Length: 134
Image (cartoon, rainbow, N blue to C red; front, side, top):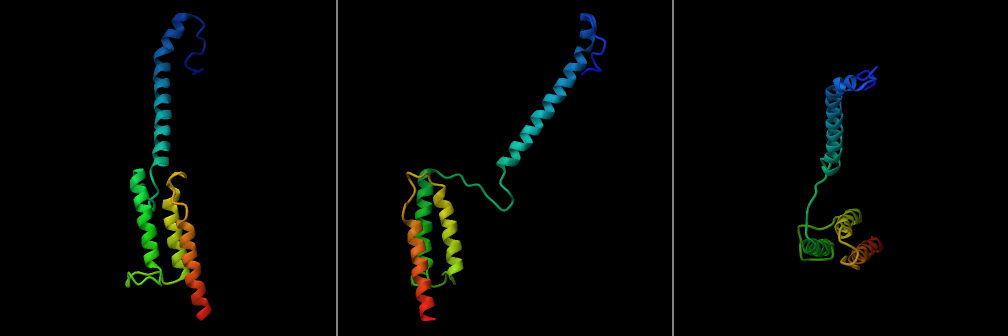
């Protein structure tokens, strides 16, 4: 900017450089807007290995209830689903961690309070009994 208005001591001289300054200001503004837009887009876009799902509160409550029920049905001592069961304690712990991520998305006042503890107890009871018999 100093090179544009160097020696501009009176009004006529300043007006000569106004058009150049407008173009410069427009270029700076566009660059700043573009940088902000790109940064925001990167922050809002999920990584390749993540997805974003928009659910209503009701949908989220139903989904976590179904996930909890599915978790209970996949425990080895449940004979409801013969083909899909947790094969070991580590797999069950990974499953309960995924269900807990869903539950943490529910605001505190709506969150089911005992599901996580119930799943942990199911895991401890089943695999501790399995260790005792082994």
